[in-house]
Length: 393
Image (tube, rainbow, N blue to C red):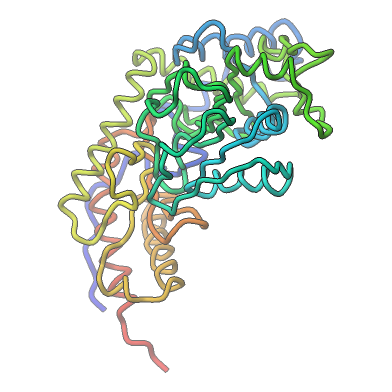
């Protein structure tokens, strides 16, 4: 079997995972030195740090003053679940799904909440549903960016300002990297572990005045666990949106979130983060354009993610192989890259078609992507040579 020369230059940071994502450039454990460890999150210092996260988030993202921002349990998943279980049921709901997380929210609504007036608009991986078919007299649940498919909505123009229902947007791999039109979004959820490069286990829930009005005027037919409850006596629990969290947060993780927000501010805010992510996507697009063995899973550039970039191997020989062999091929490529400390965690999501997934969000340096591309070529050539070796008895 032929051996291929390894490239001479490795990425300075070989972390390209889509969650938890790479830390900001220059991050060290010293960034957490000011954490309120061993202190109550309900004490003066703990509350001040939680409120600082909320205040800095509002400034960096440009969230309108009337929108509430809260820190909630269980990462983005917890924030989405809280919204679904607390808000849905008052109207019919349109569920948009084009990858595994969107399909997970469909399961919650159809099989767990058992809403009879739920309409599902689905698309295959790499595609997006026909957004013109969405009924905005209904509530609408969708992911802004499908982390496991690399598909994002093109913009917010498809959402009317005079909608009757609520828009509930899982924005976890979009926020801080894509332009979110706040006036079109009634609920936005995310976690710090994506574009900010923060740690897991905490979610952020942002509510518009319309979402608050729903919470205060509608009581779901099902019981709500404590960690989902956002109202008391028919009124919003405002303290949750002032830093009094529903359960105990990790003050170490909070400190890390503050560090990420301060870094974002130092660059110039969300516009600078978007520019970094788009520059990274442009670098990947330039490489794909000149590389015959690879293609984007998402053919349409207007819906192509600039964070969770999903690629497929276009080699004619591999395309004829069974799905399990294609999956094994990608697994082998990822193992080769990890063994060389050239790239970690670049295999696609287990529910997606076999392929590579490279995080290109704002914490990734374009120079690291450019150093990665020759390694991807090397891993492909090596894995293909191995796969095409005659099988011995």
